[in-house]
Image 1: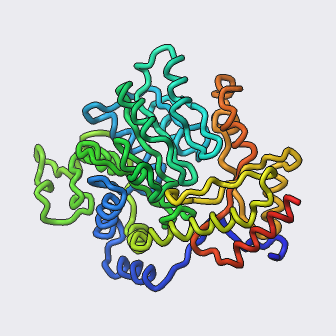
Image 2: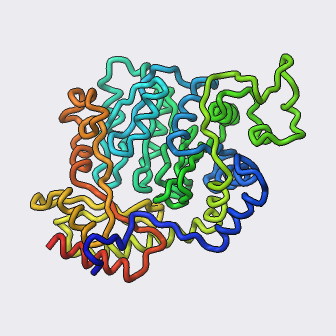
Image 3: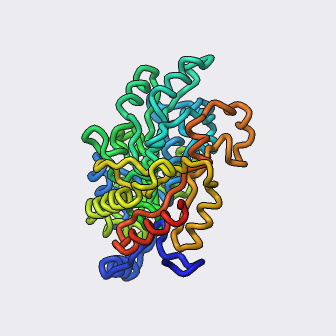
Length: 404
């Protein structure tokens, strides 16, 4: 058993090996640490892996969400600021924050109790009972913990109502839905490569899409709206035809729309390129760890609900739902951490349990039963590829001790 107070099994981990060190030294030796060759290589390789025509790297998953939503203001068949966006109440706050920060209104619908994502039934119920469906512009599901939402059903609703499907695939690197990877089914998708994710570099995000006009606008948005969206100009390389002047001004410093500085750096994308080479083995190892933990903790069925296993899911973590009312989540998490197992709550139900969204509470009280229950009783631990069999056995022993 781990020494009390000392963390043995973390939610996420990172091992820097010879290839990662070589990649970082290559960036330093190049003399260029802002966006360059590593970043463009990552964009192309990530788009190929996901199954879209292109991708745009940003400095975080939050930036990817904001860039994507902002870019939709400037493309044909886009969305108007001030419109309503249907999304999940059970996720990290970045998704709903991005909706509000780009001038939209989040509309929260309930989630599936087993896979944590919004359902076609809850979306249809919202649209059927709203005052004006034309006010709704976008469906923004989140594939939480790697579980894909019902994208065929959600896409059908989007088409029936002339809405955009924007996937938040931040936690689903390589998850498969109906033969395709999440992030390739909607008009666009956002990814995050935060430290606990399956591709883990610290701070990095990406937008994927096969819509060339949308990709162009995302490139502009993330670079303060500059007129030139060419990847070469973004890297300030010489020889690109778009560097010629526009009305006697350099296109790189002529701003067509208002945007942000969401550019990334070469260090992050260099690390991502190394990990992308082995992403399938990362996913497989995480799946094996989930299966091992499920087998070892099966005796606790009825006390806790273990995650649904699927070889189509690329697991970000190992989510657990407390079902026995004798066990209070906060107390359980403290006990687990004292015994060496790092934990995270499953984010909370945003309009009902997050203080920053208290203005929404009255509207949603009693309307989101699954999300509210999960937000108060669910948590997750690590299932990452660096866990050994000894680590997994330690988790199993610790859970049995805490939930005895």
